[in-house]
Length: 165
Image 1 (spheres, helix red, strand yellow):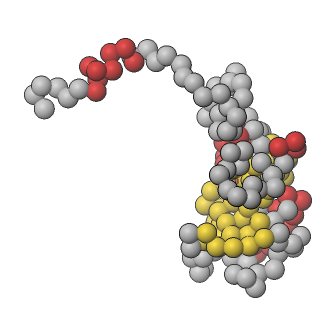
Image 2: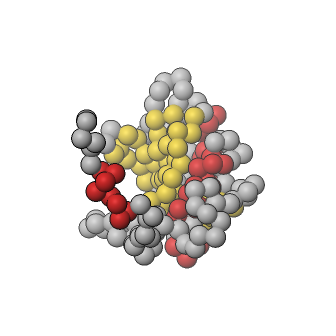
């Protein structure tokens, strides 16, 4: 893995819990993904984001957000995590849907929950939350709270096993 050269450069590389990962600049993500796809990483397992607002580390990450692409080489079975730092002041990343078709749905989910915009996405609309929802609930500064649930007052009834059980 360490010999794999990526167009646009690699900012950092490492192994976490046995998984290889590389960090590439946001401007080079499409070139990196295309290059990796040409070298056998043809499966996008998932795409998501991480909000490092309150990450308990000695050295906080340079940017608040990070978009993560998990790729699999179908011939070798090797998995590679590609990480892209994203600044809070400009939470945008180029869309990868033209390289990996399933990215379309994962990008919509990531935008819906984290508020990271994927430039060039064909229809960046909510996928999990109602259209009138305000904010992005997986951001660590999203207010934690709750809404009353219609059946919550009779929770003892529906959490208790029937007598004949």
